[in-house]
Image (cartoon, rainbow, N blue to C red):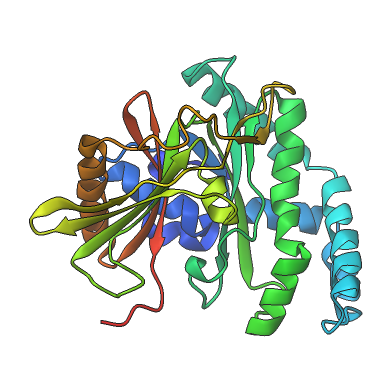
Length: 323
């Protein structure tokens, strides 16, 4: 295929066409880690769409009129740009590749399974850690009539108000980026969270930090959830501290709509229950140490457990550490 690459086949040298997230997931798979299967719609696909539909001249025209001192103006004009992208017709050959890949992914799993559509990006001269959560992600999506709009929204999300403002502040030119949507098997996370292979607060490189909550990891990213916190030692590998909180909210499958995700209150019977067993904590810490060795730098890792099975969802370098 010209515009599609399977995650399992991606390497570090492909960041410039697949974005950081996709490339790092490929490296994880090739080093024996458990990553949800799926494919990447590479950066050249978005370039192809833009060129075929001649979108860039109009986008550049709108960009030149943005008053970056007025957030309302940024919001209004970024919305106009996203509407252009969301309404643009996907070229037939690109559409054929996407649909063929969706069929293959469905055949490899279960036609009744849900998918996740996630944004993988690369900004020239910048690490992914500098723009967490800026691009769109969609969970529990099923059927091409639902998945295709999510892919479009991922493409368009590189022109959200917050993304444009950040790029303006960083002095990043309009065309110096890659946006490459990922389509993956949806992991129905029972518990998920983040792992830092160093203590980013104290810069203690001998400690590993784990934060966990019920459901999807989105609740941690938003900052609204009260979550459990764990500190582990690296050598020897042990559990140094558990802080089990009364958890308030979690995000999971939208049980009313039967698709997408929704925020719920944590049931009282599990609100103070420890989210992870000792065995899972040690498994996470061991995985973190091994991932750090693969990438040769301290890592911020997103993970999830499903029926006791550990899945890795993302790994990226931790910035701004002082040792």
